[in-house]
Image 1 (tube, helix red, strand yellow):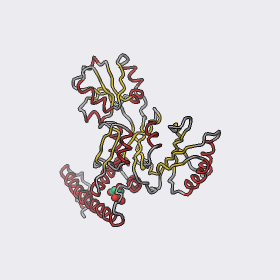
Image 2 (cartoon, rainbow, N blue to C red):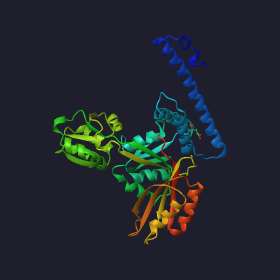
Image 3 (cartoon, protein in one colour):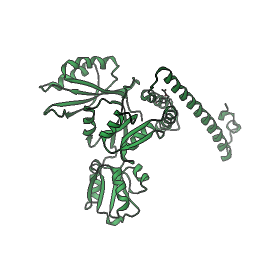
Length: 373
Ligand SMILES: O=C(O)C(=O)C[C@]1(C(=O)O)C=C[C@@H](O)C=C1
């Protein structure tokens, strides 16, 4: 295969002309193209190998994808940024997976929400994404097998947890198979019909309105803030209204052909939302994993301290603990605990064995690769 070293100008000490550089780019593109199809044929081979051992194989392997992306970032010498090359490889794997078997991903819609952006960030643009109206529907769609996987928001760095997502796990046997983190930037959007000096209503999801509160107080103190079920809904709503604006992400602006009147209006620029990927199968260890647990404790003093002691003893760091009422029981609670490690790690397994006799129930919601991108 030809390499750029074969080109005369590189050894001549002369600056190449634009034409020479473009010829070299054409040559490299040809190599990349051949290698892409070579990789795609290998992925087809992988699909056949999976069928050979299992008549109903699982094609999507998040632990392997995380390892591929980590390798890409570790060996990257630039000038492209680590994250840039990883995003390119994410799309390459998305295309290879679609060739093996197209994957349907249910997400909390409508289109244009941050959850939509999270689904594309995690699965790439070759996934078949399906917006659903509620978090419960996303769970049901995956439970029934109508979608392979689902994407739901779980916590925001400034607003805290999405209780409804945690509550859905209490009554479900789905696994957490991944996490995605997304920097949240809010755009102040108007439609072509909006009279920009007569904005009296601003639509957005309630959390978004809260995340932009100071900016809105300073710039639109008199406008009414109307909470809708999603930012996507807000963006859709203003298409036919002349007195209103919406706050949403860039995906919504593009989808509904809206203008960004003010960019990145969030009060906290490091505002990040974490999403969970849910699926029906447990995931093997990737080497850098997290585990989410649901623990139903006995209603007695010191219950939480008893639960936490084995983690400390086995040197396991916890990344979050949330408490939710264990409905329909009155005054009973469950804890959602996230920790560093995989359930197949000997220290995690040992801690779980010690906790089991102390509680009513401990359920591993899932072990999954830490977010790479
Ligand atoms: O290694 C596999 O199991 C593959 O199917 C190949 C591949 C890839 O393109 O690298 C594609 C899809 C999987 O989610 C993981 C990796």
